[in-house]
Length: 93
Image 1 (tube, rainbow, N blue to C red):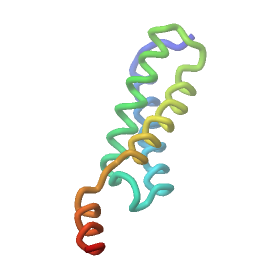
Image 2 (cartoon, rainbow, N blue to C red):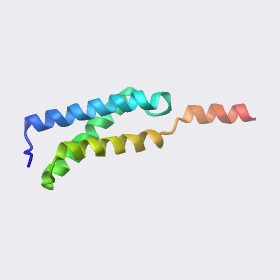
Image 3 (cartoon, rainbow, N blue to C red):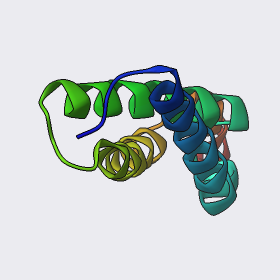
Image 4 (cartoon, one colour):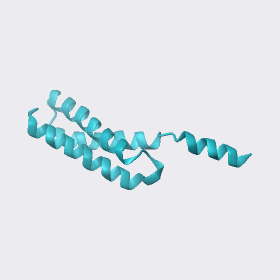
């Protein structure tokens, strides 16, 4: 079992940053910005990782990585760009 200490927090933050950067490369201009993906990755990884540690789940870092990928995927898919909707509506008229 993993403990909640400084090294674990470091790895959770690192996992969130790496996954946020990879999601930015995959989604490109369609999703959130790089800053949004990085911040969302860190927040998602910390919340999911700490929750897994507190629930005494085995391999909390792996749960954090998988959960962060799912969290950022959903955030990027349902991200709405109001300017694009407005310009698309004007172009159709």
